[in-house]
Amino acid sequence: MAIAKSYQFTNIFKDELRNVIYSNEHLENRKDIEDIWRRVTESLCKQKYSTINKKLFETVKKYYLPIESEYYNKRFDLVVNIETIPENPGFLKITEEIEADITSEEADTFDYTYSAFIPRSSSDDITDYNLKEFSMNDAKLDFERDNLLSKVVSEESVSVKFSYKCERKLNDYRVKRTEEKIICLSHNPYRIHRATWMFKSFKVTINYPKSLDIRFIDLGVLGKWNVTKDEINGLNRIRANYNALMFKNQGFMVTLKEV
Image (cartoon, rainbow, N blue to C red):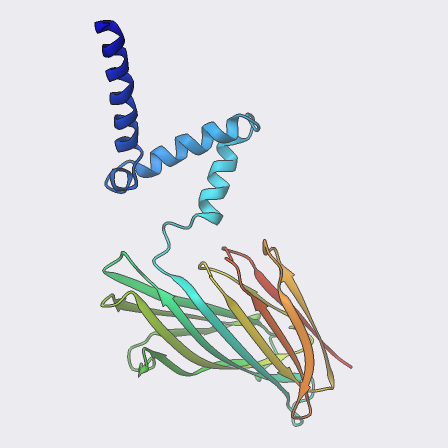
């Protein structure tokens, strides 16, 4: 009888101990949570993929669990207006208006960054990039005075990098920016937008003249872009929505061609 009770008590103790060890509260306070997750993931993968389980874990962590990212985009709306330039045939003026809600929950400060790259020829003095406006929570930033944007013009390209260190006083921020790009169509037959941070939802609107043929192509997303085409104010319009998680290096591409 005593042995039976002792065995019963041991089982109850084991169950309670297991509940404590694997409870969310206990796991969140552990300092080795990443190592635990690594060992669990590798063991899970090893059951079916014994020869690649470590590589599979590293890939999942790097691209699908971006724990090193300081924020993610809860909402990202991009409106692209494309115009031809009569005085400069073969060049396009592209105005991009971006409004995004970003969330940062841990870091005391975080760096809001982005970059752009526009190919050009050595004889091209028209291709250019200009940041017209940038605001965070409706407060406009003087990016020129504070040297937030760097632009390098070489014989092959115009490249820009933007970096703003934000002191985290809130969890959620609304970012707005307006950019103007002048591109040479022959050197830029396609434009690629790849995620550098994680996105929860992404909406794209492209307005363009009927003299252009534009195709929208998804890049590696796990779900499906919902793409529609129509006309507005004499222009062609593409609207694309992606309402699922988008991870690093995923996104979309548009091809541009004169009709």
